[in-house]
Length: 217
Image 1 (cartoon, rainbow, N blue to C red):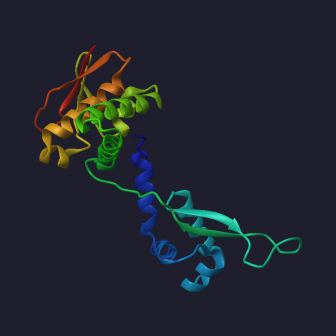
Image 2 (image 1 turned 135 degrees about the horizontal axis):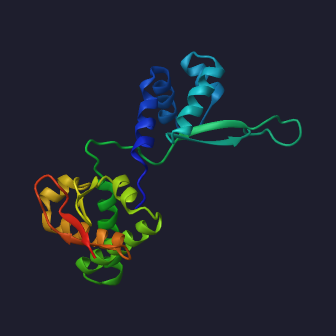
């Protein structure tokens, strides 16, 4: 349920704005095996220092992963230092304005369907429970409810004393197509998030806002 903070995702995408760095990323992405600094420098016609700088920046932003390995057939004393090899990171980086997190609800739906197939329990029952438990697990990761909601793209705002309005729906497009399904999953998710807090989650759809509001418990 954890969502990578928006500033981190923006920084990662901004790192690709440099044409040389983008070329380095494309080179590593197309390669069938991890790429060394020397190989990147030779392929792109830049110095090893420039290649290393861009490779490390991409790794810092989470776009590349790296490992240290000696070339095949070289080992033992005198083999030299292992080479730093880079490959494309397995996780994707996505940014949308306003924030959308279709991966979150997609994961909930996939988990529920998989468990239903394995157990024979009704998908709807599993889905409600899965969303609620995911919300509880998400809340356990932080003590700051407002920051957690903001980080997930809900854009929380106190519009009345003790009431939190969620001004953005992270699942907007799916909520428009499958309103009842998505809004009820969202409600169960947020019920889990606010459990033990001074709030309760209720369905209260309003134009331009999330379908759930958080009222005083």
